Length: 129
Length: 129
Length: 129
Image 1 (tube, helix red, strand yellow):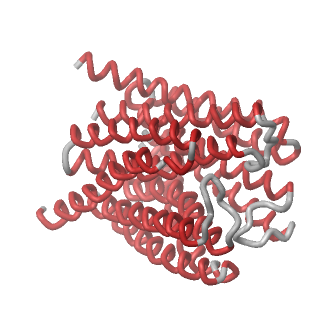
Image 2 (spheres, one colour):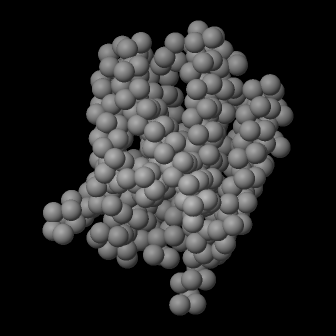
């Protein structure tokens, strides 16, 4: 269980760092709140953070439910792939949004696997007990 | 408990499908990342996904806390209403955003009920034990 | 544990209220869905809600993990600071976005503390047991 909590905390800290980069780009490129458009590099940083938010909402519940029904170590392993994938995603997106596919896939596939495994595990639990 | 995990997994898969539709609309209508505006249909798909993100963040914690303090089967039942409501919301919003109220209500009301029930349940637990 | 559930339910209700204000501003300033720009006050209300979404995704898992490994009452106390900070954030942001720093800090710092404490607590648990 502690493995999963460590992965969750690291994923949240990674998201916080992406948020810092948005704030920093806001200052650097003069994008004044409440605007979230007007500078290409700011918009890339912002989309990295927003897309990570979308992924986290799927990833975190999936991590724990998969960990309970399927296997906590596999869940943590998929979590490590997710964390590395997000770093690749952020680095490539900011340089060139057209090259974001690899990093996106490396976070999206673990997240989908966690949720699909959660569903199968929970359905089996319901019918086998 | 498995009921609630199944509802959560289905709600996350539904959100993933909404995300796919955003990606597909991005390609179809030529909205290049990081832009999230510029085509009305893309924007509708994107708002469906973003609004679902907002609902999920309320719905998932509410589902489990309500399930623990109030009743897990009622929680799962409200979850089924949520899932159907979101499908109606997505289908109507993409056709005509002005007609999104019914689908919105059918997800918002279950989510608010889950959170309000969670609060009442947790406060009662605190004072009665 | 009930303390943490109460804080979570209050944070979600607060987020729901921010969502109502976005809907209300949408009507008042004539910003038609799917648009999320076009009126400064609407955009401020929308950014308050969106930023709260970003914070909640960090805050809620942090609250429970910190509560389990470190101390549930400290977690709840940080949660109360978060709730007050968000109210200040919302009130100041809508009046003048340039003055949002205090309220932002009062929610961001508790959230970061919860996640950092969660990480330290989970790592210690892993190596000490």
